[in-house]
View 1 (spheres, rainbow, N blue to C red):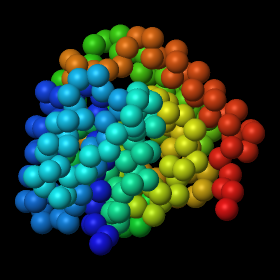
View 2 (cartoon, one colour):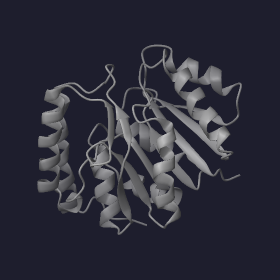
View 3 (cartoon, one colour):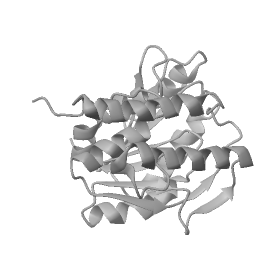
View 4 (spheres, rainbow, N blue to C red):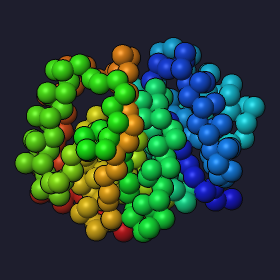
Length: 245
């Protein structure tokens, strides 16, 4: 049976927080009376994240536990969950809920209006940053955004590609994600590039957001992500984002 909404939650070494996240997300959508499924995908954790997800899923059929078997990266993990989804709409969000789950209500009206992708942004005038990132992350983020818009023309005008809170029409998501090639942090701008390439209607939406002190992004990830940005341009030139039916 098709669900109204699939929520994909990528998880790596999150045994202490994954239960709280799943309960918070589930309680919210139960209050909205939405027919939902939660797909929690373990990315080869070295702690008890997977066993915790499985334990929770055994008590609630709306929760599905998936695993990559080994660490593959966030992009791979989100794609795994999206391609297993059944929902008319697909949302992915981070375990720390740095964008609170109730911000779904900011995104969903745009899909009701005919947009295919609505994604949270921390960089718009109406964005609400409850806890800001350290100054150096803000600075590096701004530099990265300038590079994104310079290197990938399809992303020009987008202020924040990297916020981990994105809502898709289900059919669009399951058409976009099979073309994804980047399996780590750069997948966010890659999927937006693919969406715009194929004419999907995309909208950037201001959301509430709080920096998590447990952020998994390291300083070394910034140059790596810029390398992945160049890969998007190269992949496009090689025709790797073309459908092959």
